[in-house]
Image 1 (cartoon, rainbow, N blue to C red):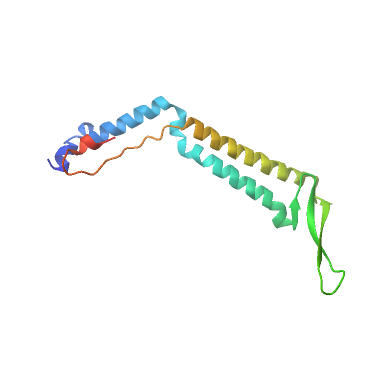
Image 2 (image 1 turned 90 degrees about the horizontal axis):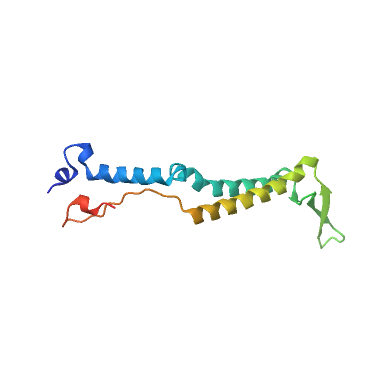
Length: 144
C-alpha cells in the first residue's frame, strides 16, 4: 500500500494521530512535569550561568577576586629594576551589599546542582514519536 493509503482518509483514523493522542494521554497522566519539561530542563544551565556571572561581576567592575567579606586586589611592587613582585592586598568591597554577590553565586551553583540531580532522578516524561523507515511493512506497524 502507498503512504496515503496507510495514513488513512480522515485525520482521526491516522495512525500518526493515534500515536500522538497516546503521547498526549500519557503526558497528561505524568502531570505538570511533562508540560513544563523544556523549562525545567533549562533551569540548571540558567542557574549555573547566573552563578558564573555573579562571581565574575567583581572581577569585571573592580580588578579584584571576590571573597565573602573582602576582595583581593593584585598589587605590583618593584623592589629592583629586573624583578617584579606581585602581592595580593585584601580590601573591603566598595559597598557592604557587594559582599552578598559571592554568597548568591554559591547559592545559584548549589541550586543548579540540586535541580540537575532532581531532573536526573525524576526523569520527566518526554513524549516522543519515532517512525522507523522500512519498505517491507506498513508504516503504522513501525510507530512507537
